[in-house]
Amino acid sequence: MRQIVLDTETTGLDPKAGHKLIEIGCVELLDRRLTGNNFHQYINPGRVVDAGAIEVHGITNEFLADKPPFAEIAQAFLDYVAGGELIIHNAAFDQGFIDHELSTWYADGPRLGDLCEITDTLEMARRMHPGQRNSLDALCKRYGIDNTHRELHGALLDAEILADVYLAMTGGQVALRLGMDEPVDAAAGAGASRGTLASDRPRLRVVAASEGELAAHAARLAAIDAASGGGCVWLKTAPD
Image: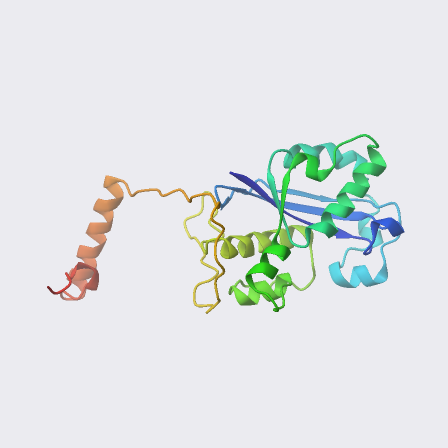
């Protein structure tokens, strides 16, 4: 199951008013694990970035001056997302900008919905938490996800945070990265309410411990028991 968590930054709020993409950030999930196979690209919009937008994301006109236009990165982006399920917060906004760029450069080309299934986490959050604030920051607080390192918005950073939020919303185990030893449970201790999971949600893969891992576990418990003078609670059997 390949899922791609996507976020964008733009020159302003409305592509119909001539505003353009300036950053695309994507992180890849395979079977609910972050793989590190990310897509990240800054884009020269060919126009001035609104001052209000710069206050949000901090991306200046000077910084974008030597970046490629969308046409030069479009095919690499389309190849990256093709066939995956896109996870986007307020999908209509990002999809609207991307489709507008695609229609500008490729009149008869594909649109995002032609290539990918799209899941909107804002719509999910509104169903799960009706009447509550469901911005990305609000969801981070609700699910106990640390986003204190985010002083400004950025597409790749927001995509990484949204991946943690999405995994917490749909099962609780988050940020388990391939090749890393420490999973992070963002919902632990958060006291967050949980919504009802969809009945057609894919089953999670269960990986059983190997004989070697079981033996190592038993040895660790024995060492704890010896060091604590027989106080290892995991070795004590329940009373009849």
